[in-house]
Each structure stands twice: as C-alpha cells, then as structure tokens.
Image (cartoon, rainbow, N blue to C red; front, side):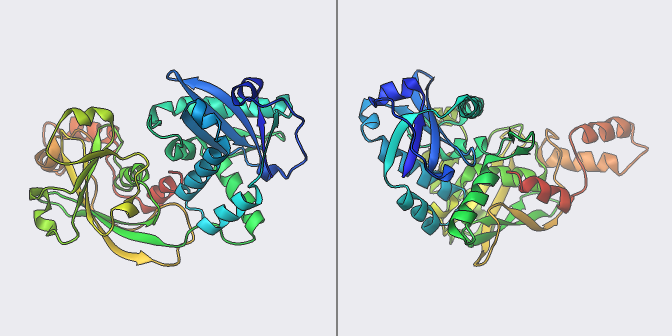
Length: 366
C-alpha cells in the first residue's frame, strides 16, 4: 500500500478526513505538502526512506479527484527519466497500487518535507507550466545534498537507487546507451568528443553533458536542431531542420519557419534515428554536430562518460572562430604586446588543455 502522509492544508484540499498512518515499509511511504507557486497549486511528495521528491504542478479541483493516478504517473515518468528499468518501476507501483491518505508522521518528517519544498522553489524556473509531472525539476532537486539524523549527508537520488536495488534484488538501470560523436565545427582546428550517454537521456541533460565535455561555462543561450539521418554532415547547416528545440520561451517570439519546442521533458530517443546539431552562444556561434556511432547494449551507469577526445575548446567570448585563431596566435608569441593580457584573460575564462579525468568527474554529477 502507498501511504501518503499529508499536511493539514493538503488533507483539506483533497477532502480527506485526518487519519492515523498505517504501518507500511518506508519505501512505500511519502510525506506531501500543498504549495502555491506562480499562483498555481503544486504538491511536493517526499519519500520517507530515500527523501526522493516528486513534484506535481498546476493542479486543479478535477486533478485532486484522481490524485492517485496522477501520483503514479509522475513517479513512473520521473523514474524512467532517471534511467530506472521499466519492469522495476512497475513492480514498485504494483506493490503500492492501493493508496491510503493520513496526517504527517512527526515534526522531524515535516522538517525534511519543508527542506524538499525549499529545493523545489530553488529550481522553480525550470518548471514546465503545461505539465503536471516535472521530471526535469525532480531530477535536479534530488541531486542536492541533504542532512541525515546521524549528522551524515547523502543525496536523495542515490538513496533511492539503493532502496530500489534492495527492493528488486537486481540491477535497476537500463543497460542500453548511445555512443555519441560530438564535433565542434571550426575552420582550422579539429575538436571533438566521444561520449557514452544513457539511451533515455533528455535534451537538458545532453546540454549539460556537452557543456562539461567541452568545458563551456553555460553563460549563453543554446538550441538543438534535428535533421534526417540521410543529411550530408558537411552540408548540414545549409539544410532546414525537422524541428528546433530551444531552451527558453523567448525563442518563440521569432519565426524561422521551423516547428519549435522547449527542450524540457524532450528525450533524444523520441527523434532517433537522426543527426543533431547543438548551437551554443548565438554571438560567437559555436556549432556542434552530433551523430550516433553505435548503440551499446550493456552499460551499467545512468550518467554520461567521455571516452575519447581531441582538441581544446575555445574560451568563452573569444569572438568566434576568427577570434579563437587570433587568440591562439598571440599565445604562441610571448613577444606579442598583448601576450600577458591575453594569457591572463584566457586563464580567467577557464581556457586549459583537455582533462579527461576532470570531465568525467563533472559528468557523473549532472
């Protein structure tokens, strides 16, 4: 049975009489609170065992009448986005298919729930307004460190993985992955990365993967474009994409004659087979071409790993392809009058030789 332990205002909203909580395994127990965010109602659920949070947003009276179904769907969608195997998710949901609503357990659990709500507020700018479930926000919130009773620290997502591993007695992650070749298009330099990503990866996580793999600082806007698989890579930027995936609502103010969607809650798998481009910083115009080299059948992680690389990434705000050439020319000549300033500026921008170990440490925490 799924035990949903609600604050008084949530019980009132649901029209449930306050009941005493039944004795259930903590993995099936959730504390829940009702919030108002951007003048819309939201529910934050926090698992008692792992402290893993699920957010429901934009709830109306009609949704409260079928809250059981909505909670189940939200858990399913978010855990799929985490890369957890569908059969393990369904086994969990089947074991907890019956719902019981009750009052909160104690002040300690309410304090933990309030901390989970704080994390949701912190990432509220990532909320998709036309979706009840919020997998992207869920994943971000559950990577934040929380304090435990014994004064140790942990991450809710890692706690959840351990709980589901114990529940299932088996490996919990999908084992299929994609080997991506990501080429930064420069006239005079060969810069690329080969990265293994979980097959379920969404575009916000792919964005962060590319940022970390190339050492970009995420200072600027970005977009993805989807092209048919048979487009010639050398001519790809001369072709019209199938769809343009953008990072914020402002992009919809401009019509380029291509269908547009927000990247949030969009997965790469939805568009395969295809060729992708990733454009970062519309001023310097850093263009990347992404191709799938192969599908890996036995991948044990649910995070990306960089396996091979060539070339160093230009520093942020260097002035595009031509500016990067000029920057390198100055660094190669210590007698140049601008050498000291340029070297110092490059250091401040994080310009450095590629470091595979450092990149993979960062990728693990996306």
